[in-house]
Amino acid sequence: MTSLTAFMLGLFVFIVYKVFVRAFYTVKPDERAIITSFGRAQRLGKLMVEDGSLNEEEHRRYRFPRLRTIGPGGPYFKWPWQEVHKVRVVTQSVDLTWDPTKSQNTVEAVTKDNLTTGVGGQIRFRVSENNLYAYFFGVDSPLEHVMGYFISVLRERIANFVDPKGESLVGDTELPQSGAQSELSEGVSINDLRKNLPLLNDYMEQQCRSTGARYGIELDAALITQIDPPPEVDRALSAINTTRNQVAADISTARADAEQQITMSKRAVDIARNNAQAEVAPLKELADTLTRIKASGGPNALRTYIRNLRVPLLGQAKRIVQASGPSQ
Image (cartoon, rainbow, N blue to C red; front, side, top):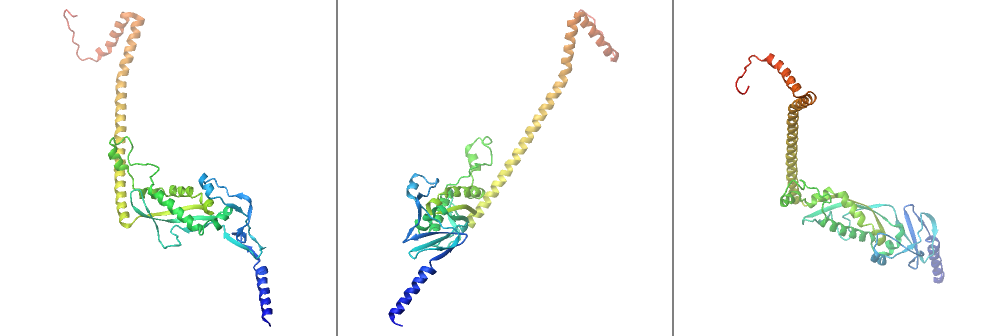
């Protein structure tokens, strides 16, 4: 076999492998694929990705074309100068501490009152089928960019987090001195974060809605599950929580006693009022009776009524004293 024959045979084998063997491909049910010809992706005309979560300046920055997507199935054919790019579009999860550049067990963040705390959890995400251009060609590592963006927003939120409920141990009118009230009702930021983890997750989901238009990755859910301060800080927080609970219990007990005393006082006033009305009612009735007798029969009828009224009293008397004199 001459060298020319060997070269032609090798060229034939290469062409067969490149054109016929590698020319066919399949796409799995959980995958989507795009085709690039000499490095340029096949586009859907002049259609661009539209997303309402971006502002005007971001619309100009993140302006990506819509690509022709190949769905599950096959085998499909491609030319040797074409390249197939596949990606899974199912919902995936990644730990919040994931970072390809370093190894870490928790994400550190500084709270409003300058306490360093560790944050842990997961995020669920999926690749946006409507913006595969940003995923494949926008940045080198889309997931790494999304994680960095997520951590930055999370740290900023934790540093400025305030309990939105604004609950205090006492009411506004129960302590006239604002200084004492603020001292009792002022919360600890880590406690506020632990109580409001669902609100924190909702906030992170709202702030990261634009990641689909930026990087081609849509955030499905934020699952921040733990806020862990250092051990010495955690012990101090436990002591603070115990004290606050004791203060809250004492205030509740005092409030219940005060309400009970107020209720008993109101009932005592009602009882005294009812007794007074019971004593006054016969007198009022007697006065009304005498008025009607005098109006209908005159003074003589009134004197006759009084005389008849004395008869039972005289029958019950044991001794009668009759006075005589000028006054008689």
